[in-house]
Image (tube, rainbow, N blue to C red; front, side):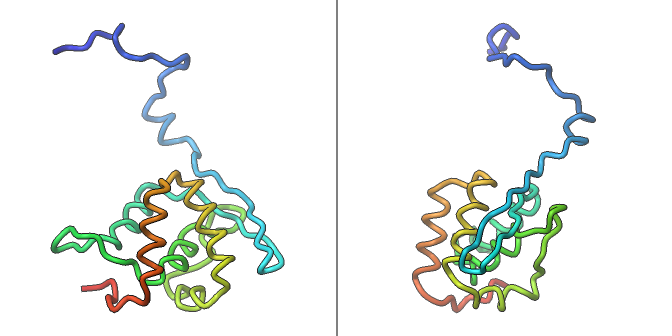
Length: 142
């Protein structure tokens, strides 16, 4: 069945061009108070490529089954905590040390990051349940 233009739900705005979409800065940053650290951090919206890579850590590449992401909160914080220009503050080499920081502080970062990045409550509940099951014996690598 062919749709006619009149059947499409139109919004009251002008359609964007390729150049406008690719040229638009759509990566929001918010300042988040972290009382456990007596300060605040910037939390950023990540790109789809970064989010996909992060989410793929939770999928076994051979079977497609879900698997736990070791040091989940620290990994997520490393991905979303940034400077005022949106540049990540942490690298992969910081994750172990970051994982030893106050869990309540990392939960604040996790909650705000998931909210800003529009990751659903179901994904959050599953990730937290996986984390709460105990330490992973999976290194996350093959």
